[in-house]
Amino acid sequence: MAETKPTAAKAASSVQAKQSSNAISWVAPVVCILAGYSIWRFILGASSGFAEPDNSGAWFWPKHHKPIGALNAIYEGGIIVPFLIGLFLMVIVFSIERYLTIRKAMGAGSATDFIRKVQYHLANKNVDAALAECDKQKGSVGNVMKAGLKKYREMITATDVDHEQKVQAIQKEVEEATALELPMLSKNLVFLSTITSLGTLIALLGTVLGMIRSFASLGKEGGGGDAGALAIGISEALYNTALGIGTSSFALIMYNVFTTKIDSITYGIDETSFTLTQSFGSQYK
Image 1 (tube, helix red, strand yellow):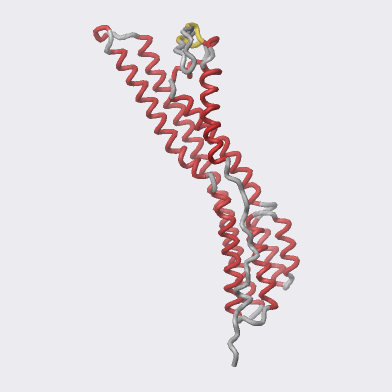
Image 2: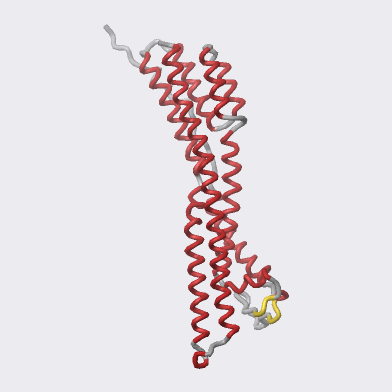
């Protein structure tokens, strides 16, 4: 008796790799740091905002004194401030980018309602109607379900493989589709998680530099010190601390928000695999 080969189960996957550019991951940090310096130097450090502007011609870091407004006072935080502003801008940029991506991945309507509709159509052996629901959903759960349903429909008519191999083929198709969807959801989240810690560390560096300046001023003139230099040093320390804590807190909040949304999508994808394999196992024994 000739051996039967499970050719259908080994058919090429219908899932295609997503083509996406990740230029934002290296362009955004550079642009944000440059923008942070520009804000610090030309807006916060505008000479018109200080009672004693630096007229020495220094361009990169003018030594202005006696800020007029509260924003101008942030300039006295020193050269660490542009990096902290840049990190804050990065949080905003990557939060917007992740929001748009994850919002698209969530698709239209509730994933739970979508899965229930697919289960209903599969219970009535109406695979085409289930595929139509996937086109309406337009999210990651719908994409994974659609890939699985195509293999599901193919396995219904397959005659050269046994039932267990058909179920495995459907499950494999869902796993391949999932492997392509999940990286797209978590991409660039590493920037938010990194900034959560990096913002605090850079702020700590600015705080230390400010305190060094403060103690250096106390050591001048026989220990009497310069009250103005002491105040500037303390301001540098406190402004860096405040900016760093604010940036890290914002990054942590956004990171947790996005990971929560990704977890909900992942749960829907897991439900997809269970739905397809259980439906096929019970409907086409």
